[in-house]
Image (cartoon, rainbow, N blue to C red; front, side, top):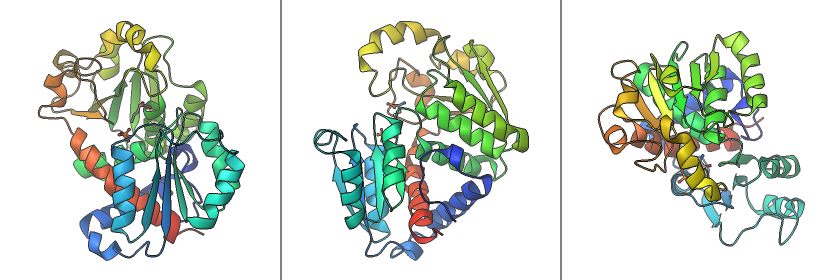
Length: 309
Ligand code: CP
Ligand code: NVA
């Protein structure tokens, strides 16, 4: 695969996504076959924000494939403060073969990728969360089969980074996605524009509505995420009021198809964006998603480091 970085699903072709899914499946099925795939390589995780899943799964994933991993945490790192992004990138590329970033600004991810000669993976920016989106669609292929064309995904809540990656993923894979948001919390129009361009060739349908029941109607999967993403904590109370009608409840799930999956990238706030009765019960596949972060990111690292060029 001639992919140099993973900054956004928007940059991937459907073929590249399928290739990542194939590697992920192989790695998940026979992890021992990949135990030395990254032997002698080093990975740095440079995180400006907290993380459980992304941090643990990249660290374990790299280690399980024979690489060593260094984590720079969100308390110690303020990217661009102690030295320029350029100097950070030009130092790190001398020591590591892969850089995983979690940043406040997507611009920083792009800048790192432009400067560093080694692959850069976006481990979440305020604009996108591609490792999450890829994991989520990989998880769905395990549940319903490889062909996600026509699969009806419904995303309810904030038009945020996770939402953007789900939109891009649907567009590339020919799935349908209906996003239900309060007015003013829409996904970025640029994301919709790019995704709708891809949708013309894949047959995906991308819709934004302002009524949660309309968004969920007939869905195969209902997805939500926190109402106040990292960086927006000061808006938590205000958002709690604005978003309350968008909480995923049992009543809302009834609008979806019978047996519809419930999905969440986690961390979840029970009682805010989702009721415990939905996330903790049958139909919820949130821990399958969380487990697959490990396998999918191993697939991504494998593709970027060993199959590049
Ligand atoms: N879903 C996700 O990225 O989780 P963390 O913020 O814990 O990494
Ligand atoms: N939208 C959330 C995702 C966390 C994994 C955030 O950015 O905080």
